[in-house]
Length: 150
Image 1: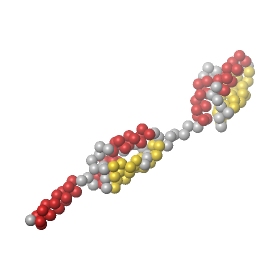
Image 2 (image 1 turned 60 degrees about the horizontal axis):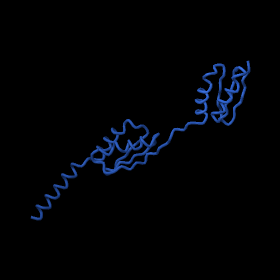
Image 3 (image 1 turned 90 degrees about the horizontal axis):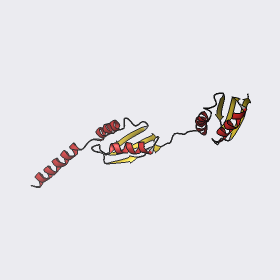
Image 4 (image 1 turned 90 degrees about the vertical axis):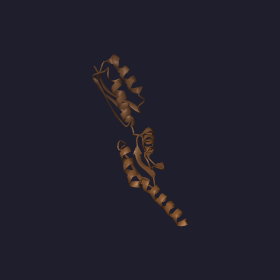
């Protein structure tokens, strides 16, 4: 009788383990779920998914983890994804602001280097102060006036 019970328990354990998803199957499902998330890689060990890589936002990091929670066989998720915000240099911000500020003055051009605005071109005497003030409003380190008054 003891042998019969032992055999039934052993068969039950074997059947239970046979139904459990294998790490390779879980890995395939994880890769499919993460296909649209660039910069993220994953590994699976005993049903534990580990995410690594870099993304540009906390929302993307959270979405990657959320997408895996519904996968059969995933026991837990270790989210080691790093959020690296895109670097926007001060010059890029100043250049965009300068384009807007100089839109009304078609004969004036402006360049930005190391947070210094250089104004070139021709300007009417009455508009000179407006252009200089518009450039200074962007808060650069300095505004270099190389404008020619016409």
